[in-house]
Length: 231
Image (cartoon, rainbow, N blue to C red; front, side, top):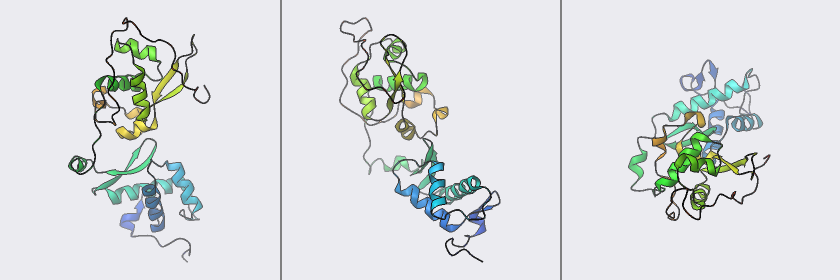
């Protein structure tokens, strides 16, 4: 007998993944949930909503496997369409199909490119995090202007990760979830080559010229921002 709160199974060819039948209601609920969120939604959050809203059959032995099957089925449903279900920044999100994205540049606003010095700084932080301002300067060989850090912060690409336990307790910088979202990465383990980070990102005001580290006026003082939680 069918559960009145849980609609019938959809066609097996679309609804069975690894021998786990997925209900049509579960697919529709997850689809609506991900569509309604601007940011990637974690598998755990999806599972909690499915469980709370009757989206997981009561006789399901492995709830995690059912959620995974639901996501896999939904992803297969959107494969080859104008938007795709992708796993990014630790969650799930609908994104424009890669082959169509270049065709939208004439009708969608396209962000301008950040200055190369800012992108170099971002790449250093991404591959050496957590790192301090002085460590970034040592790698680049030039002083780092505060405006470069401000630009990356405003674009939500980096974030403070506490302070290093050395004299002066300088801030440790690392990438944020916004960085993962922008570059379409599941996690930092999917980082591309450094050259591939030099892509279009939201722009800010022009940066002042940077000079050698020995240039007069270099500021080595720690940045005046609050300690990160738990620092």
